[in-house]
Image (cartoon, rainbow, N blue to C red; front, side, top):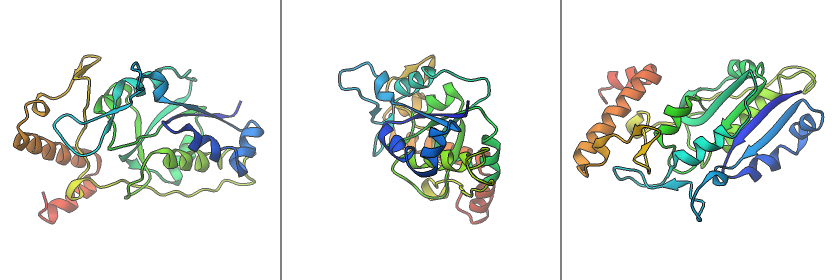
Amino acid sequence: MGLRFDVITLFPEIINSYCCEALIGRGVKNGIIEINTINPRDFTHDKHRRVDDTPYGGSCGMVMMAPPVVEAYESIEKLSDCEFIMLTPKGEVYNQNTSVELSQKKQLILLCGRYEGYDERIRLLLKPREISLGDYVLTGGELGALCIIDSVSRHLHGFLGKDESALDDSFSKGLNGLLEHPQYTRPRVYRDIKVPEVLLNGNHQEIEKYRLGERIKCTKERRPDIFEKLKNQGLI
């Protein structure tokens, strides 16, 4: 049995169309890799099959809702050596060493984002490994998932004559170079995790103060190099 990729995506045709071609397609045909797609829309509970909503606290854009994504993940049969990855600008940098590491797994579950990001409770509940492709923004995580599938597969015995792949990635900047603050949307309470009260009170000055604090905290914890650079420049 080859390395299994399970991709959670709102656009499975993007994944499927790429993965039936060229070396990836041959790897699937030869049983070196297996690729499945799971659509969160299949786990909605309303007639409109809605997977996004406006963010609490007010902001532009839409946020991916927690219930469809969490339930899509829970529907996947997990193998003994499985890594769950969220494609996000906030994640660790993806590089050659990471692709080699992931090629040792039996299963990779890849979550592709869309819109303005994920409801924070997806991360809190599922505790994924967060990975980014670099300091730029894409319209969705499917390209990131395909890059991981491609680069990881190249390390597998029989896929190529030798191991070779190179994808350097880092992260996408948030406001003023800081990482983005956590996002929340409906429902207000999901699996005992509540939306922070400050986002519900309608006081936009308090909301912006809270979000700035969360951006600084997130950047300091996850990218101390960027945090120190901004601090030295007097930007925070």
